[in-house]
Image 1 (tube, rainbow, N blue to C red):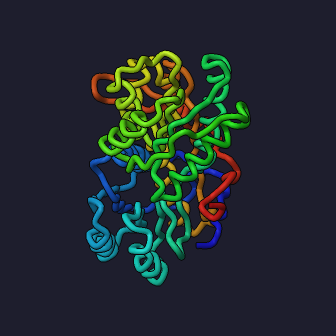
Image 2: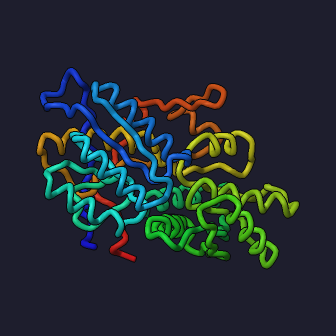
Length: 338
């Protein structure tokens, strides 16, 4: 795939009253996996933005079935939605949809993953997200771990996005501690059970680590669970998560003494920006191929409170704080650099 033109910025925040653009009447979104907390919060962001702008918004769940995703998208097309948003289950499987949407003149926004022939995609910069978390981890290690950084990376080598996060984390870490080493490079599968299993096996082989990095929240939490199950103290340990997908990382930062950095990716903001991108495409405005959604490392036990509040089992995003974040003009590295 051609290198993405990872241009900045985020689509400007618009208000219904301030917009001179024409608004679509209905936007349809086919998500790949609606039971995952990340996508539930992406959907919340889309719903919030669509409601603000007075746009009818409908969601359908492909449940990781690309054939189902194609059928749902085609049904939206036949209904005559004004804009279609898709999170691809499979990049290759969505290529015919991208082609058909162009042929029919239907604006199509992709969320999260690029597809050949696409007009635009809303997504974070994965390498940058890992890199900035790595820099903060290096600072923490200097102040609290004697300047030593021995990492267990609970990764996911199947996906370029998660490889970029892991690479970025180590590169950022080494800007502060050049001697930092990756002791274990694991395939945690992106899920807590697999992450726990491979982390436990790695620690049984060699437990001489003091930093656990996870490419998503399930990975970091599975790694920490394996550490705790082995009976080791969290003294002298740093856990770094990625995603900020739901309540899990907030609970960990509140209760686990080693869980002190989260590379937050703000799924609600991704959803919010996707709706704004849909409006721009509907009005035939030029948009970058990659609309970058911002990320930020949350450092310290209470850092999440700047961006979220929690009541019971409901978290609410602080839109003012998140919308104030500035995404980069372009990603430091992309899949083309792997």
